Length: 98
Length: 88
Image (tube, rainbow over all chains, first blue to last red; front, side, top):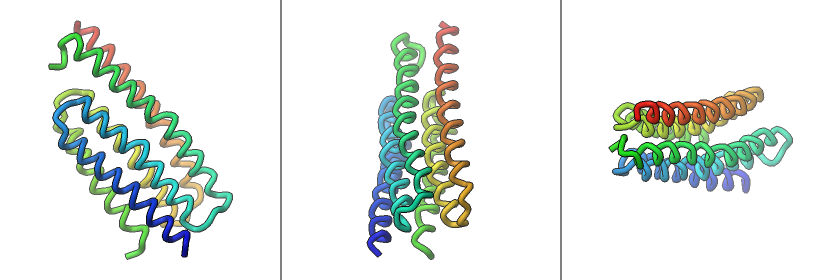
């Protein structure tokens, strides 16, 4: 029962961050702002959802892959967002994109 | 409706909203950001589906999809960068 409650809490947090990130992605006026809100959606939303799936039916050995995916997402998604923002910055500073 | 079906419907809805941004995005970087977010959401979606269908080997699919999504994002961002520099 306690694992069900933990799953619901973590999954609600992840869905909240996914919803807020998507709202920022569709409503923000600038490309940098969209990259900012998309980074929230990537790191915290996905990590909270995966942690909710780990805690869903108790801790067992098969949850190791989900923890591995969380570690990989936390390594790679800020790097990808940084590369996208770097390409946007290099393009807008030369006056191409605007 | 089970407790695990609600996040699946919500994720499908937000993926559709991200596809709107990927279609109407003014620049190529907006489309790239939207595709990155869609890749992350599909990672979570495959994890949920592996719980629903009770298939253990879908978790390997999640790991491989995370690797390929990161690689595609890095390569396309490099392509966008160098293409605009070539125009200059």
